[in-house]
Each structure stands twice: as structure tokens, then as C-alpha cells.
Image (tube, rainbow, N blue to C red; front, top):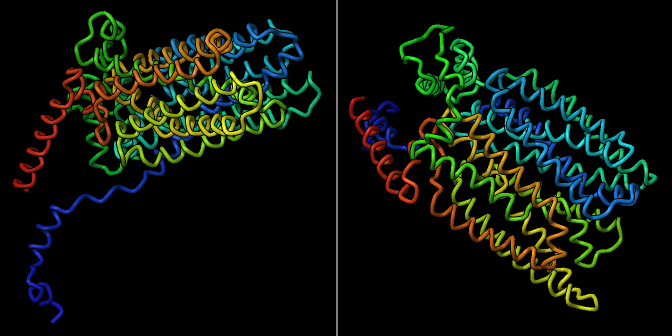
Length: 523
């Protein structure tokens, strides 16, 4: 009787199999090996986050101890971002030369030296030397972590895993804020030195941990090491079929024949990086030009919308909002770091479910509203001769909502998007250009914010950031295709049509659907 059950229900076993073909595919389980690799690589971003966070509070004590003016403090705080340009500019070529993994180790080693120099600084000039060395390490870390993570991640989890650098930047910021509070009770000449010097400790553990990671499969293919690349892809893919597809895509991008299955092959010099800058800047195709606009534009707007002004100068903003004593200011700043970290963790779980565009656009819209609210609150306080409690509450609420909205979209998606849109042979250099833009704008904001709010009032400064965020929303809405669920080699196909990318996307979707129907009918 049991054997007759399918027929009794009116559905044969064969029919059930055919119906199963039309069921939605089950999402693959999270690849734990790829997860571990992405986490270790991304932890180098803690170095930048810690420096940003710690300088927000340390600057108060440095200014008192070394008797510095606001102009010197602006330069000290913001200059690391410009110094990091040296590291990010060198990181593309370095990572193509020695590999992604050893470049991450190099980043940790350089930052270690910089943190030690800052911790033992005896004067302003000595401190600036430490900032220079640490900045180079930060530039290396910022460029290479998202590139490595994108190259090692399966398509199903690339958004989730590539958002890790931003997660760890936020974790580093929170650690920096906590360090400020923890060491603020020490004598003036010791407190800020401990705050800065303690950053050397994580860099040692990070450099050692990274040595246990595999090399990027894409870099291995570029070196002609197909056998090693296959081993890594088998471990970091959701299935062996996906591993074979990823290897075929990378071989095609590197100019290696598809039927070539030797463990070691000869790769043309062009595939190893020659002519990359010419292809990027001098003779770019429409596709590369569109990718450049998107990749560099998103980095520009991430920083130009004022995030580093809030993160680096939050104690001063809270002071302008009416919180005057050092301890409450530092505690309020820790709240900023805590909210920022919580919401970036929330964002990582939505990147591959909701998609890049919806999160990015909703994030920027929330930032605009928060910046306008903060500008209104600070303007009211600025023009009042007594404390207005509701305006103080508005300022605190909008600062927290601003960092929350930033962290659910603009923060992580900048790194995810820019690391996945560049073609393989242009990826390292393209990403380094994005990081360079990011650090230049961040440096300019950090080095001019105090002067800016002196010139146009602190409320006016945040209205300016709100205006820039409006321009960012229009830019993203019109020029940014969705990249969710596509492998890295498919992503570049939707670029090149600029404002008409939606029609191109529709064509590709129809073509893919037709291929799936054809394959099912053949099976």
C-alpha cells in the first residue's frame, strides 16, 4: 500500500521530480573556510578604525599637553588620511608583485612601527613622523582587505563577506573610543601616549594570523599557478561546480585557454599588470569609464557627506551641543561608536538578501534627514543664550541616527561595490584609486572641519554635508546597477551604458532566463 501512495494522491514520482525542477533553489550553507579567510583579512581594517576613534579623544589631551592650536590639531588628525595615499598607491603594485596575503602582513608591520613612534613621541614633529608611518600602513590595509575578500568569496556571500572591512573599521573606532575613556584618568603626559601606542598590539596578532590564510585564487591564476588556485577555489566555493565555473571565469579574464588544465602555466606579461594604467586612464572603454565613475564616485561621496567630521570630532560636536565636561563627552562618543558598530553588523546580513542599491539609497536618504536635523539643532543652540534641552536631545538623536543610517548602507557598500565592479586585470589598481579618493576627501574634511565651522557656523557645516548627500543620492540612483548575486566576471557586463544601464540589465536577465530554459529542456 505504501508503494501506491504517490498514485493515490494523484501525483507520480516522476511528476514530483519535474515539479522539483521548478522549486526555488535552496540557499547554500555559509562557507566557513571563506568566512574565516574574509574575517582574518578584514581585521586589518581595525588599524584604521582604531586610529580614527582614538584620535577623536586623544586630540583633547594632546592639545593640552603639547600646547597646540586648533590649526595644528586639524592637521594632526586629518594628515594620516593623506599619508595613507602613499600606502594605497603602492598597494596595488605590491599586491600584484608579492601577493595579496603578504601585502596584508606588510600593512600590519608598517602600522606597528607607526603606533610605537606615536606612543613614544616627545613633541609635535615626532608625532607627525609616527602619523606618516602609520598612515602608509593604513593605506595598504584599506586597499588590500576588500580586494582579497572579494576574490576569495563565493558569489552567494560576497556582499556579506566583503562588508567585513567596514565592520572591523567600526569595531576599531569603538575600541579607540573605549581606549580614550580608559586612559583619560592617567596623568596628562601619559594618557594620550598610551592611547596611541596601544594600537601596536593588534597589528602583531593580525600579521601572524594572516600567515595562516591561503593566497587569493585570482592572484594565483595571474601567476600561472592553476593547481594552487584550484585547491583554494574548491575550499572557498559553495560547490565543486561553482569552483570550476569560477576557475573558468578567472582563466578567461587572465587570457588562459579554457582547455588548459596544467598545474603551472605561462601567463602573458599583459595579464600580470602591464598596460593597466593606460587601460584605466588613457584609453578606457565605455565599460571601464562607467566602472571608474561608479568606483571612485562612491568613495568620494562616502567621505564628502561628513562621516569623518562626526567620528573624528564627535567630542567637539557634543561640546557645541551643550555637553561640556570631558568624561560625559567621551561617554557620549562611545555611544556613537556602539551604535555605528551595531548597525554595521545588521547591514552585513542584508547585503546579499536585499541587494546593494536598496540599502545604499535608503541609507543616503536617512543620512540626509539626519544631517538636516543636526544642522537645525546646532543652529538653534548656536543662536541661543541659554541651554535648550530639546535642541540638545535633537542633536544627540540625529548624530546617532546619522551614524546608524551610514552604517546600514553607505559605509559597507562603498567597499563591497568598489571591490566587485572592476575587471580582474584592473582590480588592484582600480581599487587603489578608489581608496586614494576616499583618503584624500577624508583628509580634507579632517584637516578643515574646525576652520569650516568657524567660517560658516557648525550648523551651516552640516547643512553643507546634507546638500552633498542629496547630490550623492541622485548620482547613485541614476548610475549604479545592482550587482547582487552576480559573479565578479558577470558584474562588468552591466556597465558601459551609463544612464541606460537598466535596459542592459533587462537584456542580460532575459538572455540568462532563455539559457536556463534551454538547459532544462535539454536535461
